[in-house]
Length: 324
Ligand SMILES: Nc1ncnc2c1ncn2[C@@H]1O[C@H](COP(=O)(O)OP(=O)(O)O)[C@@H](O)[C@H]1O
Ligand SMILES: [Mg+2]
Image (cartoon, rainbow, N blue to C red; front, side):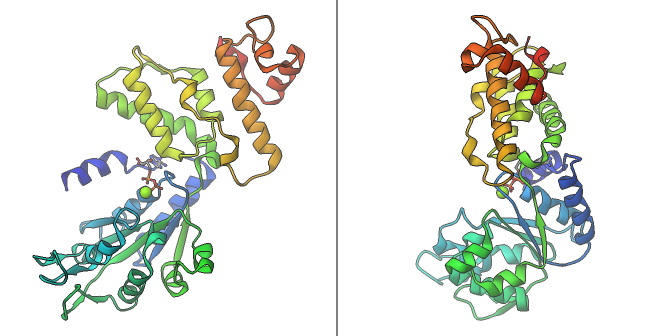
């Protein structure tokens, strides 16, 4: 419980002013006071749980529990008992009655993370809870009525899962009441500087460090990178850097950013190629400390005539001075 409180007080703020984040915030504001079921979709690390907590906090249920269940983290044999509880003797090893997460969340919100991973038989039971707000503990006969708001999240394409037969379409329509899509970080790169400042500040305080400024080259690299692990990856890299680097200027090691052009699967081809090109050129300029020509220059490393590299630097709007 204490851990829950600590976590939420620090991480509950949704940073960003991109159109994507603004849209999410306006949706949260609209849906939070209702009791509607919310389905949050988005890649891993994009902030789905943060959105779920924000919905709870801004709802009339905020004084009641927010109970989070990661459906992917539990073995399928235990999920039903985890969600609905069990009576003593319900199955081998059930030597005590256990209260499930739905009962714990009574009056509040239950967050079903990775709902796409639920086994089919649990999906049936969940559907019934959503329809009737009633269930029985496993091995029990007494009907339990609960008042719970459901917020679900998934990084899976549930429509594809329905086609594949691993997700029930009736359950999908039950939870797909108010969808909120959280865009990947690479589609809202304008949020990166604010996120970087936010995390640098928070880890610096936590570690008792004084950071005076953020190295501009570092900021360029962080902004050029594609972030396959989204905000969680950004947060981890900042934490690692603060552990490893001394001094009062925040910088990172370019080697920590895994350059992988294939992780992005949508977006116009040329735009993706240019982003990748920019990453590579920034990497070379970092190593050459901003020098383009000459034996230690970036052009030689990249196998390009210096004039060609100069024109690409200009076209891609890279500031060479940052690397000096
Ligand atoms: N917009 C944001 N502003 C600040 N922190 C964020 C934001 N989005 C995500 N985070 C942080 O990034 C981490 C991953 O977010 P989380 O909600 O767990 O992602 P998901 O559930 O989508 O995998 C968390 O520590 C969260 O606090
Ligand atoms: Mg999550």
